[in-house]
Length: 142
Image 1 (cartoon, rainbow, N blue to C red):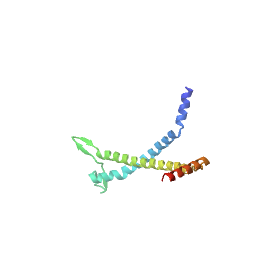
Image 2: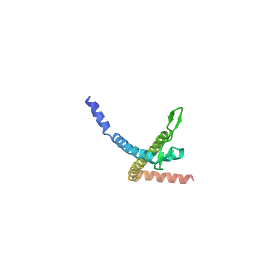
Image 3: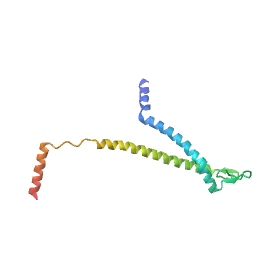
Image 4: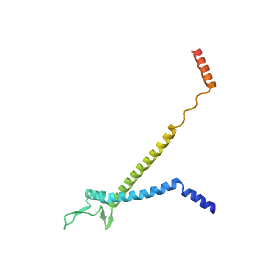
């Protein structure tokens, strides 16, 4: 049982699990922002386009009533569906850009390490001599 807990501790404290936890928290924060954007701006635009807006008789202001239609008393709320699809597309785009940015940042570090590799050692005396012999033999053939 002790070995099991040690393995779990090693797994839980690895960078991948911690990075995933941070990603979930950031994703939740972005989800709140994206939901606010969708509910405050995109849903009213959809309502204007599809006719889900009515004028308030008292104030004359436009009032968002959502995008839906009824068939035999059953309400089909396509505005909520469109809102969920738009939320998904925005979140997928944000996460794609975050992952792409992190990958490029990590790739830069690898490229620097590759550039810092030392130059290959100079050829030995034997290699130089063999190269000269090879070149002389090529000249004789031509």
